[in-house]
Amino acid sequence: MLKKFLSISVIALATLCFVSSCKNNSGTKPGQSTEKIESSTKGIEKEYELIISPCGKPSMMFSKFKPFAKYLSQSTGLKIELFVPRNLEEFTTKVKTQESGFFYMDPAIYLSMEGLINRDHVYGSLCGFIDKHRGKLLETGCIITRSDSNIKTIKDLKGTNVIFGPKNSATKWIAAKKTFIENGIDLEKDLGGYSFGGSCMDIVLDIYHKKADVGCIRTLMCPVHNPSLYYKHSGLDTTQLLNVAETSPVMTWVFTCTKSADERDMEKVGNALRKISKLDLQEKELLPADTRYGFVRIEDSDFDDLRKMAE
Image 1 (cartoon, rainbow, N blue to C red):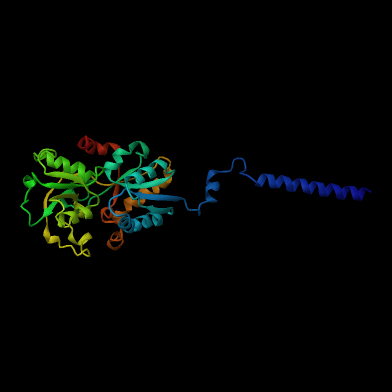
Image 2 (image 1 turned 60 degrees about the vertical axis):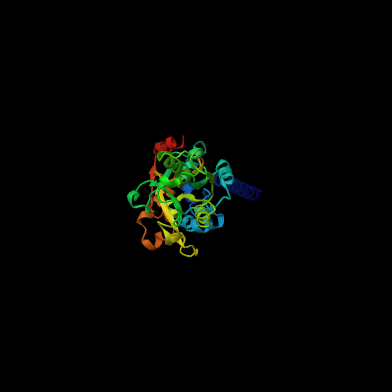
């Protein structure tokens, strides 16, 4: 009888110990460090979208920026998927609804969305395609026409039909408009007419095919300055085009994130952006032309000149 009682007691005690052990292991133990918790999920990639502000045909933009997204993914250990919106409305919706996302955008678009993005993590791309602005956070727009026209200087623009870029373009609208005004040209009174175009390449083709007299594009995309960069396989005879003038300089494109993006992840991305300038030439040439010279962290106050220009 005593032997049977002892056997039952041993079984009951073992059961209690097992249950207690399961409860202790089912959650985090009191005092367990956050480092140990994080280490258990270290191999799991976080997912983000890299969203590019619209500046051309989505298919072309996707092809252009896919290597950029791949570089950031490989450099940070994050899973960064590229998304190219069809238009500004879709881009704006993405900014408003993204829980976590990165953005590369025209600085004029940045100004219109300041309340929706993290202004503490902004990186500007360094210019490398204009000698006098090389290594700076500045770029210009180009005012082009056909070389067989009577337009040779900016003073000849009165009476012409002009295609500017979209109103959310710092170079193709804000800087271009300022340049016209500074040279005594009133857009409403002195021009034969003006309209708002789309991508730089579309504007170039419109001028080439005489759909307008003058076009305003980014200097980066100018077929006179950089004929081999984007036009070498287009069949376009770039000698038929003339660069009349450059606009006033404005801030280059900027990289930032949503307010909800993890601070540590944005720091990883920021480090990867700064390291671009140290890549070898072969690695740089895989990236979009305006990102090849690297990035520097900037402050929101660096946009003050553009703000004044846009008023």
